[in-house]
Image (tube, rainbow, N blue to C red; front, side, top):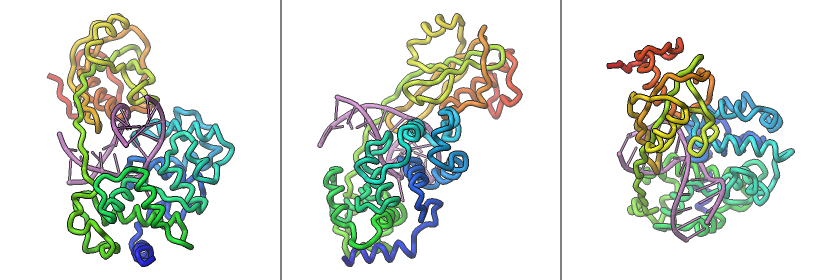
Length: 332
DNA sequence: AACCCGGGGAC
DNA sequence: GTCCCAGGGTT
């Protein structure tokens, strides 16, 4: 048990003071864990505060319209998380108290269910996130450990008679602050005496790279009375709002469907992890009634698209919104 | 187990 | 540009 004591002693001294540290309210723990899915701590913190200020309880979240939930989530990314959280609030009266049942809730996989079960309810279950995966891969010198193997290794490390929630957090904290992906601080590591990957950290876990293929899209900015045409997006960015976005080759069909003759305005590049989006932005005056995009939850890509299109449309003689001033984009 | 999905930001 | 973040879901 010396390894456990070493890590816990280190954690007590070095744990970062995060807003959810020591939190016992299961709902608040749930919100923090969902926000932290594939999201860095520093980015999640302001959303955590904002979300709980607006939706302090499961009931408050349940009674809120989805659009408002998305609005609070705007900018955090992975908007399905917000949808799932909202669905979850409407599906259960209160949060289930064990890992197996938590895992059945929408948006809760093995990691989040284990995190909530251990931190909120003290269940003795290992939470394996990206940090823990890296720590364990190095500690046990595994190049490509499977989720099953990682879970078994993590279970084996769970200390007796200690708070499993604290232990899980300690392991993650080590990965987040010492056992770093690129430049691990091995000399400062409390587990260096136990680490089988010492000196070969770059082998564990073996990095696997995937190429991000390019996707060619077109966006159509239609300017009518009162603003631009916005629709609820489906597929990518599902749940948020934006101008029509579609494969480039569909431009003619879409323009015809709207009865407009679009002209090319600009090109926007947007990189996701697995795709590089190359978006040609087209604009056209439009007969319909548009909206002010300011009040809608928009993904970053749409902010880029509108940021380029609106000043150019203004230049083309369409009346812009007061706030849609050209910011740095000079029309030519 | 393998693969797909997806926003953002640090570097 | 690359990498990966306190992953989830489907096949």
